[in-house]
Length: 221
View (cartoon, rainbow, N blue to C red):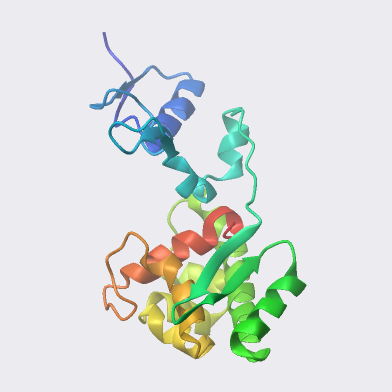
């Protein structure tokens, strides 16, 4: 049998490509070496002997453009989690910072309790407001042909932030945002998880991870 297109790998990207091609009237073969298709878009048993399944996809869900959900008529409803993070203070576990997406007042009070003032919250809010603006402008481009660096810089329209994210280790930016080590650690989590990098790595792997987390969905949710 002959096919118009062969997709190697039946993960979420391969299945999406195959679905679009099939809807365009082409005959498609998807080849997958694992027992099941889905890749990251499945729930898997992580621990032998334990009947508990963990979603691989929940970690990547913000990187799925809503346009694909619409185009492919997917029966999928996404819900934003209320709390971004809960972080005990390492040297005083009775104190902690809870970042509440639904209650800005509560979050500001939590910052005051942690740092004794409003400066840290102001720096935090400014960084994430700028990142949200960047996300809203950049994320739609993931469905477009790859843009040049100059085009993306113009799209972001924040040269200072663009350079900090694309030319310098992210640790430098975080150190300017706050002097509080707990807050620095919370911000750095989105840059380090799964990378085995450091905040000062010249490879900028931590910057790429940070952008993936904070631009997803056009908001970072």
